[in-house]
Length: 251
Image (cartoon, rainbow, N blue to C red; front, side, top):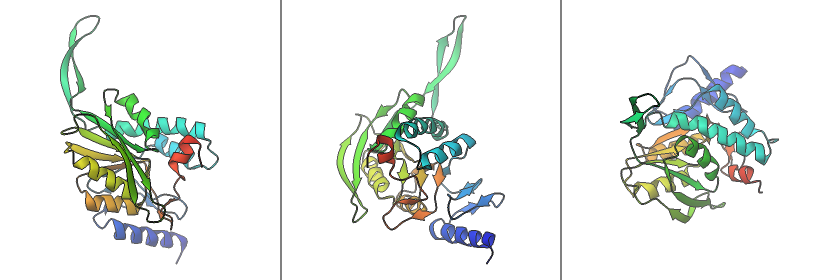
């Protein structure tokens, strides 16, 4: 089997296993062993792979083991702003009347309650970028850590704004790996009856996307990169390492 045929074989195998409902337009589809899955046109309900040259540049910076914490944070902030524009393009707006220095005119403002929920601690690295775009948003927090033996999430903290019901909630978590933490967080928030829930990540594994879609069909998933797979410890490959450690300079 030639190299190109082998790549196509593994790509088809992964996609057929985890995403049987995908409709792939073959105009541009590549898969390499040491990179993420990339494809220019994928149609799958509520899954959004955000593609832009500047996003791809910043994802590469975050992946690089040589990127220090200070550059990692500034790049993450910039990347999150770019992602936020895509994630918020369908929020509702309402018309208002404003006055310019010359006369009255029509304008628009955000027409729905927006709540940002970073998953502690790594999700905090995405919060400032979203608040730069949505300064009117309220912020909740969910604290989860992963049991390194079971790879399942353990909750240790929750705090939400007063009015989650009927709000649009954006869960911020850089890594969608096994999907366990995302699933647990979505379940906690779903019980509060928001209008809609969106999960926003930087890098996702097929296993995590599959798990979330299986449990919550109506939750929209946004990511800047869909990577190859998880290793035995539940880390995304090729991934970017532990996002929290790289943001905060810890080990």
